[in-house]
Length: 110
Length: 111
Image 1: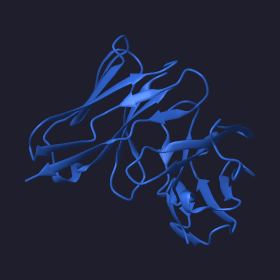
Image 2 (image 1 turned 90 degrees about the horizontal axis):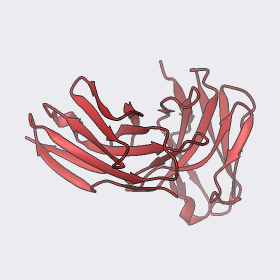
Image 3 (image 1 turned 180 degrees about the vertical axis):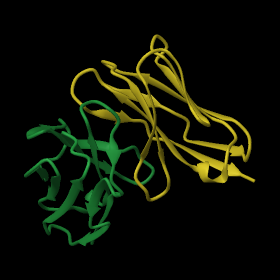
Image 4 (image 1 turned 90 degrees about the vertical axis):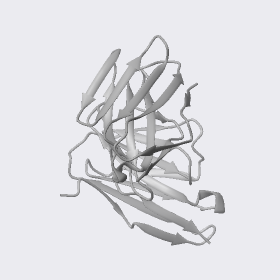
């Protein structure tokens, strides 16, 4: 089975840096995805990690440690529009299913 | 520019009345997915198609069916909607196991 945990809610200040953690226990692993989802909208792809280390993409970075079953999404220079839910999703090594965590609701305050 | 299109965006149906949700894509992706997402919960995969090969998740109720007549279109049929089926239904596509692109979703209300 799959178990994916992330904090339910986080609050951060505009201009600051925030780190959203995700831990997972899966029967197989074929990569970890981060998605952003604004209220009432579809998830949009942010990042993909399949090897250990840090992937940087503009203000967003994502880190993976496969041995620890751990990932984080780092958001720098926070903007008000970054207020959204951030979903961690793990791909198993068979099939195409993505198993999503429940998401972390991030609130950016002025 | 829309890449994954879902119609309608909002659907109201009556308890027990069959309903069909549609999804189309302009990406020519070979994999299409249907997810159910309830309020404040993670998207839950119902099934997916790899080309014409249908793959049902083990815990997807029989009440949910799907059709993919061609590469571009995929339908979700709910044969007898119950109150518990009210949710956002998300269609997604991917090229193999690469990132999934989601449509805007259809919010289903069951009265």
